[in-house]
Image (cartoon, rainbow, N blue to C red):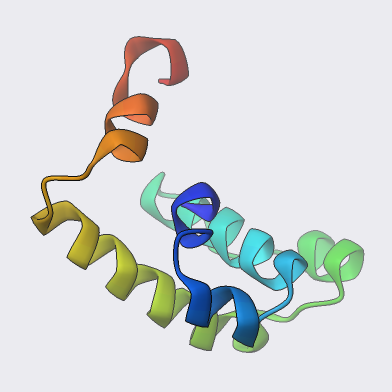
Length: 84
């Protein structure tokens, strides 16, 4: 997700790379059935879950659009057995 977000110029100019990375981690945790953010993650990143929500919303929208496009190389890459 963080790799795909690099293709969005507006997202990259609006948020720090660490903010995008933290939101990507949160999203990955959430879709794997884990709590989306922990006190430990907050301590080490300096971001609360509330700080991540705006980025999560934008990244989720990017992913929705990307899934409808024919250009899905990044998604295909990470759906391969090597990364699962």
